[in-house]
Image 1 (cartoon, helix red, strand yellow):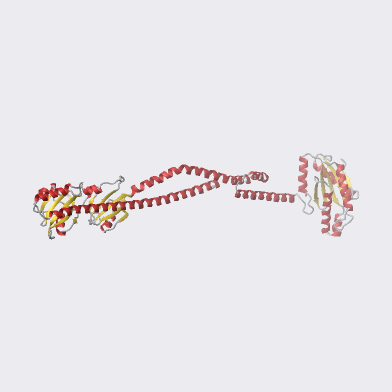
Image 2 (image 1 turned 120 degrees about the vertical axis):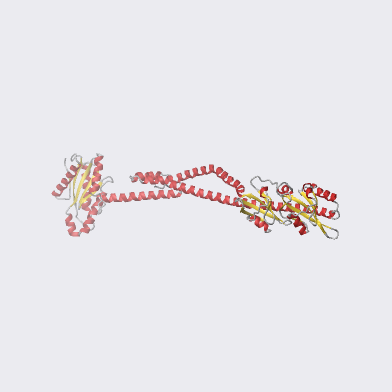
Length: 516
């Protein structure tokens, strides 16, 4: 599978964006989540403390009412009508008590509010009554079941004579499983999301719960209940006895030993945050799509010069490839550097190829064309149907030069003749070394006469020139012209060779022109 730069940039950008976005969302979610949990725990703690304070104030108020009655009843215990009137007054003047009872020190019920009047004159041996008789001080009893079968608590205050003698107590009862003062105090709150509160006594039993059927149930396994029973106040996240994840705040009521717990389901607390995160994702989606499109466009623009460079470099013709590479718009620094590097490579390659091509058609000793170069020049002239003159040259008695002066001097003589050929020719003429001391000159557009004049000028220059310490070195030349010598190009070369041979036969150091 081929990996494209555009796809790689796009994939990397998308991956980076997704990771950054996910990290941001996750970090934001975690911070908001912890903040919500912390705020909810603190809110529930404050709420529980406030209700605990209200419950304590309610109990103090109830005890003050009972204390007032107790001071005035010490001299009236023998007047049943007055006792009954006082019991009715206590029960009716406020909503603090469901029932009121006045009990003598021996446990006999002396007076009671309406619902208990049928028990007047009988001994009250309920748990609340026994606790009040035994304590002989202001008391908030534990939860117990009354004579009528109701779950309740008893708030009592002792009745004492002027000399301090204990005469009995006056008490108000608070029903726990039906409407009463406690329900009025605790039963109304503003949450509709599964939040609720409950109250436990110092043994961990429910004395108030929104589900009245649970009143009296022991829930000490609940961590918040266990903490408040130990006299602690605070807040914590917990799983309640019904397996629900809750955020609970709790506080105690010192006067009674009760604990008030306010709690809210964690799911209800975190649900708005989940909705908020999804809303953020929804709002961000159009911008994310626009961002990805912009990234795709940028990736395309970034990869385009590189793709064009790669495509153009693959072209078989170096010149065409170089031309196309030069046309690529490399608009950023790295692409410009790569483009320049490719152009330099192409230029260097062309130079190397040019040098190799030149070396393949050049005689290494003289720098003139060799036979391959001569053949290429002839093919060009023939393809253009351009007439040309041919001069065949040969150094006279060259073996004698080598034997007399040595091969090194002989090479210098050959190089000297090549230089004379350059001086006596035009830039358009083709100068060739056939091999050894044999040379050829092609003169495009020249006739036999013009070629002969050039050959004669060259012969005279050679005759009068001292080459590397030598003297008296001459040359012979044969001249022909194509197409005068024949329709085939080879005929012109044969004619020039024949004329050269004739010059040798006629005594050397001369120019002979082929006669058509």
